[in-house]
Image 1: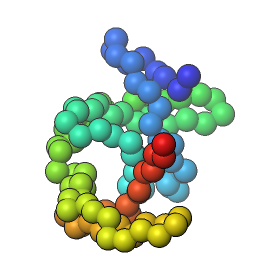
Image 2: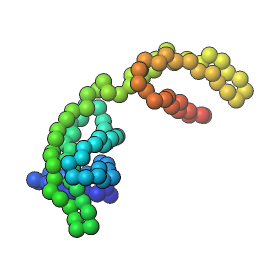
Image 3: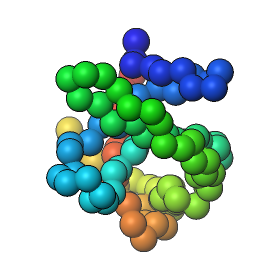
Length: 107
């Protein structure tokens, strides 16, 4: 089970951790992934050390719109096949994808 804390009657699940930022007052950015489009999220942050946890900063609330995720490819087709290979074609409809995954099911 994921680590959780309870604040003002709400349950928060650990989504990320960060290394110390240096001196008090320093700022930085932190990536929180695996968020789903179409959902509203509440985030908060707490500091910790050997003595325990601080109070919390937040929560802040934000909505992840549908447009943050890549568009699916289209015009998907088989161009050529041989005994054990296939050459596929599709049109890329996204600008910022980091790759494509091809899933296979055989019968």
